[in-house]
Length: 72
Image 1 (cartoon, rainbow, N blue to C red):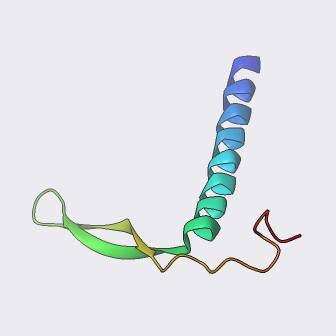
Image 2 (tube, rainbow, N blue to C red):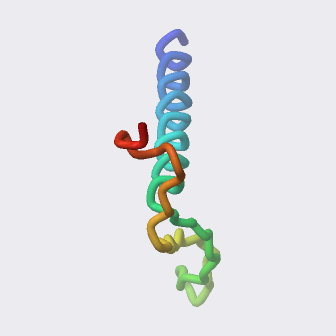
């Protein structure tokens, strides 16, 4: 039972680290992520709803005053 708890804790920590890294990259590269639903063919003539992440990268964010090291 202890191993199950440790595995679950590690999954949560990895998920949190991924979300923090993703937020940093979204800010750094000025991108937005959209979750778009899409229908995929399933078995026996049925369809399954799935989701697709679409990333839109915008122009590089302008540097703010004071961001450069030479501003002294």
